[in-house]
Amino acid sequence: MNLVRFRNPHYHVNKNLVDDLFTNYFKNDYHEDYAKNCGCQPAANVLETEKDFQVELLLPGFPKEDVQMNYHNNLLTVKMDKKVEEENEEKKEEFKYGQREFGPYNFEKQFKVPNSVDAENIKAKFDNGILRITLPKKEEALEKDPIDIKIA
Image (cartoon, rainbow, N blue to C red; front, side):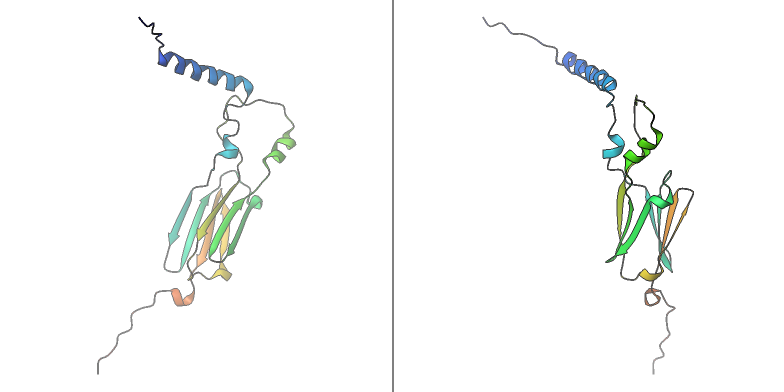
């Protein structure tokens, strides 16, 4: 006769989850790196009108001086590359996060732009946490009224 040891698998799973929760909380790494490694991207709207394309990026809390933009080879790049440590050094406060789900983060977002865009006249405006980029179309890309052709 064989002796079979029975274990309740739910007991160990739940015990491990609770142990991990409290261990991480007291070690101060509960969601500590969430903001750094979240792969966060700002929300974006892309619009097309008859005369231009418009890109709107939601950037609440970002100063416009830290946002970088460039256009090269039909690729529009919007980038935020700020060292997160600088902000913590300025405050010089000792504290521990009980839980952290947001914070400053860096991102780089790229948009493929058609050849019909006039790259020399791209404009950007930053207002109330929304970056609006206007990409005007070239004259030859604009729709023209149809021309009537007379049949001889």
